[in-house]
Image (cartoon, rainbow, N blue to C red; front, side, top):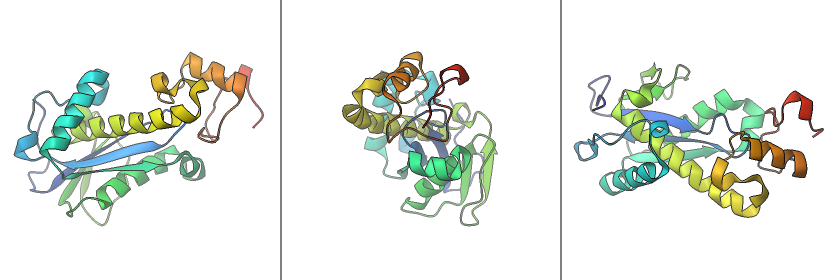
Length: 199
């Protein structure tokens, strides 16, 4: 069972993001408050779960809580402010959309900027230690995957229904063949040096 809280404050929110390492699409963040109805020993770091388990747990979270929020930050903004700042921006946006003001924020990873003078703590591998960060990782991953499936319908040649925008061999081969599209992150190295494109 993951730990419920870091601070023992009543309104401690966990936040995490998905999609930092992708070549296309947004970075997506979630923020969530864990309530007793969500205390479930199946909730874990989204990277350790199958697609089926993640989707089932998303349904469980959504049916047992409305104290969460999701935010996407587009590839255009990622290119403007860089992926680290865009990831933090997505987490700030998710927190800002909650229906209450948190007492404390716990963040997966080791980089964050203060939000609205609320105290926070960064936690390396927090998504495998704290229930709220793990739940946020599940929500961020499943909502981002859903978003990428919609983009896949517009640009099916890149295989985003399978790779979700990550730099797989098939994705890079498609970039080489078709060039990048409007959803690709132009500030990222889309192809290895020996296969560079002029964009």
